Every structure is written in C-alpha cells, then in structure tokens.
Image (cartoon, rainbow, N blue to C red; front, side, top):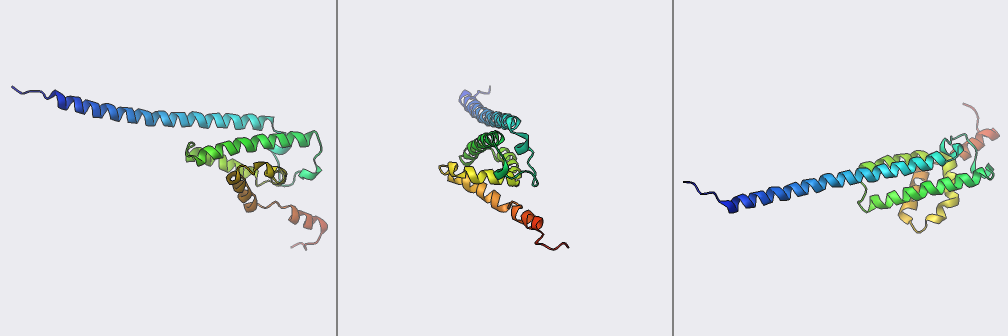
Length: 166
C-alpha cells in the first residue's frame, strides 16, 4: 500500500498557488496600465476637442503667433497650457516607470507632430519659462523644437525675394 505524502502535495499546491498569484498580479498590472493609458487618451481628446481649430489643425503656412489677437490668442494659450500640463504629467509617470513604453510612444509621436508646426513652436517660446520646475520635460520639448526648426526665416526670405528661384 502506497502512502500519500500530504506534505509534498501541500508544498506543490503552495508553489502553484503562489505562481497563480504572481501571474494574476502581472495580468492585473497590465490591465491597470491599459486603463491609465485610456484615461490619458480621453483627457487628450477632451483638450483637443476644446482647442481652437487654428491651433489643432495648425499648418506651416498658418498665422504666426505674434499676429493672433484676443480672444483667440487667449484660447490658444489656455489650450496649449492644458496640453503641455497633461503631457508633462504623462512624461513624469513614464520617467518613474509607471507608464509603459508603448503608451508613451503614442504620446511622444503626437507631441513631435504638434511641435513640428511653427505656431506650436512660437507659443512654446512664450510659455516655456512656466516649465522651469520640470527641467527634464522642458528639455525634451526644446530638443523636439530644435529637431524641427520653424520655417519662418526661410519663408520670410522667399517673400522678400532674396533667394533666386531655381
């Protein structure tokens, strides 16, 4: 007659139970990260929906920041600050490892696309001092702007006729 080693069975059951808990926590973590990402996307969509169309759909040939008057100027400024504040919040979470890289990649592509536009770059020059307390975030935006110089000088040179047509 074989004797069942209940201690061994209990030990195996504990190991399997512990493994199940670890697996469940990993699944729960990814679910929570997805919920956080969806909340950020919702908040960005809300900001974008309220953003003046001149800012949201800014083109390289659009109006220059210096020529925009109130109340549109004030609306654009509020929208830009809301966008930057949420971006800075997400950036801080990413730096602390609380936001997955794939979620951050979606946001950084959007930021890069927006700051390739001269209007966004011009507004940034007016508001960047407000991000001195977040130097890593400000440095990131500055690096994006440097990679995408606004074509103002070139277009102004063309407008004056200083460059010969090819």
